[in-house]
Image (cartoon, rainbow, N blue to C red; front, side, top):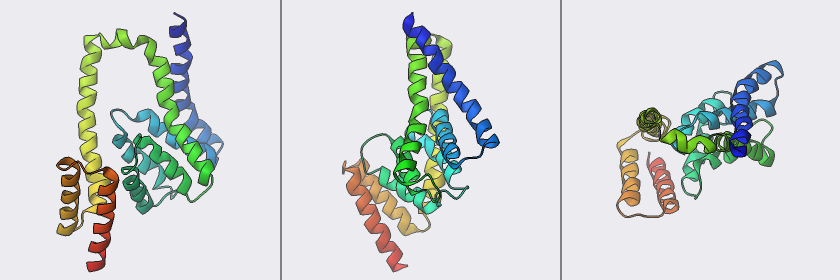
Length: 207
């Protein structure tokens, strides 16, 4: 019972913050508050895997000019070569932002903001999880959400990944080779990233 009671402030705080932050961002403009709001919202709206966060993050950091599209895609590629959740990509974005806060402060702020919603959600939902997952309606909702996530992942594969990287048959061949190394020969991801970077540089030099 005590655990369930303590869960309500976390769940309520999750909802309150996502509603109140944009209001404060509008009423009291601040670069720090804007960055925290953008990354917190991206972390709050993601379901089903880290890759789904890509379009949300891109929409938050590229149009305002905080990060260029080239920097965004380069960081995403580098994030694939290291272990850990894709959400840590936020630290890179916070560090390379043009305006302050950036550097170490920006990295820490972005990382805390994007992970905080999930911690609040876990604390808020955990006491009720066993009861929720036993409900047929909740199971049906999860199946529908999972199906939607597959569509979102395919959309992310097309944009921004495909549209920014595949411009010619040589690019497609390089992507196909990288996929084969991962899927068929189980080559470590960091080696595949290095291979793709070298191949991309060679293709660019030929053009």
